Image (cartoon, rainbow, N blue to C red; front, top):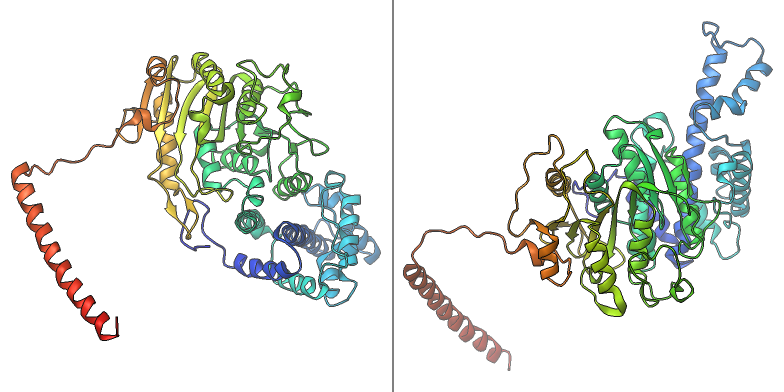
Length: 527
């Protein structure tokens, strides 16, 4: 991974070491397995570090005669430092003795280290009900090489993850994000199902601005939308409690990963007591969300749509059984509050497809004046696929009093020329590009302090429903924004043609010389 400054904040330095250690396990298991082995240990180290720091702090307080917490008898001091409430009150997980990292580190070279880690996970879940059924507990299985596991424990033991400084810098969160991205890259298509690149999540969050209210992601993966929303609230002077998080995830291992991801950040969320399919078992059936943020799996063909033909969610048309894209779109709309807004990722085909009734559903959604903004994304942003995707922004009320009345209009933004390659196959938006995109939208909505909006050829265009009708209800931004303006150099056409023709002749002449040299060299070696 490149170390240049990106919207991810750059690397911390030690993630690469952790990745290399985790990567040692490739010979013993596939990425989907060692993902949970490594992230489970990182989680364990984090909560143990936080516990140990609080333990030392309590011990210094009860041992200091000048402290108001001073306790004379040693046995009584022990009672204070082992009091669960002293930890829970500071939002720190209670970690039983045999689950603390010093015990695990001392056991790293033992052949029974796998069982020791499993027992630690069981003990932590027992003491912290919110983690029940969440932590991985398969370190003791015979197929897992215990020598490699011990090496990984030793390496993780050299890195502080849960001390106050690390927590304030959200070091564990950044390590998680780094690992999720690397695992997604290593796993390819399957791995990316639980991970949305952070720069894409940032665009969504900066656009819809979830300051306060209910945030919903019905295909929440590892919880990246919730994490970024929480960061947004804190960055704008809000508090964690300002947003309520609701989610759902169908993959059991990813559901556990999301729970861990939220737990380490202290985010209280309702993502259901178990994994479940959103279409067939909607865990938040009565929820009306202020903000919907989602990256559903693209073009799913086996979503069992034929069993849901009469579903109340299909207000704008029955989605085809062979593609779930417009089932997701209508699910999002169904769960929006009267003034709610949804921002979500979809495959490019959703903007123009007319197959199996998709065009009619899109037409009905457009005619209902629900589509607020469409963004064309560049390729190579996603770990799942190199092809470009798009962002939809849908709202029930374009007459929301906080903003300009946008009735009958949709904003189109084309970002296909934006973003920089961070390695040979993956691209990211910079923070400056993210803000440019978001500010364009905020200005178009007429938000206070966002400046005046204007159409920019090749980048953005405010179009009417009439114009969209004229384009056959196709929502591809390139149809509307046109080509960017090219500066006129004021050189007369005849003069420019003479200059360019002369330059071309020079290049032809140079080409002929090079051809002779190459042929001579080839003859010299017998060809």
